[in-house]
Image (cartoon, rainbow, N blue to C red; front, side, top):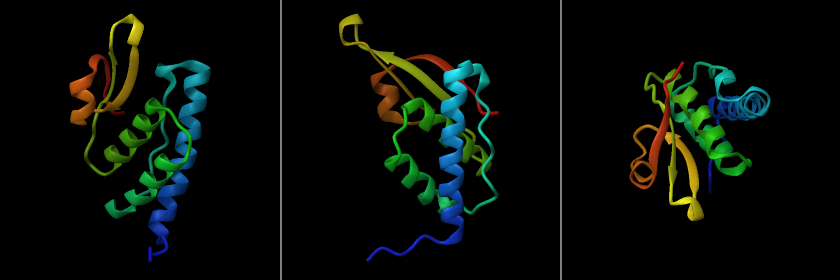
Length: 118
């Protein structure tokens, strides 16, 4: 039986939902330069399960997820860059965004742009 979420996890879930909505709106209205993810509240690292739950269950793009995760990790003292890359020739073209250090994405995609935290 799964344990119910504790208060820090619920707060992380709420922050993740609001951060994702803000990122989505900023991307639609003004593009990458307008991204300003609200910092998460001071929470312990184990509250990440709330962030992970929201990002797995709510519809979002890889770019939206990457910006939310970037803000979370920066607040936890582990800043990471958002990386945008492409793969495939024009017929099988794909684009993807991920955080620096995600090995699977780095191996499959050619990096085009790196956005540092902050």
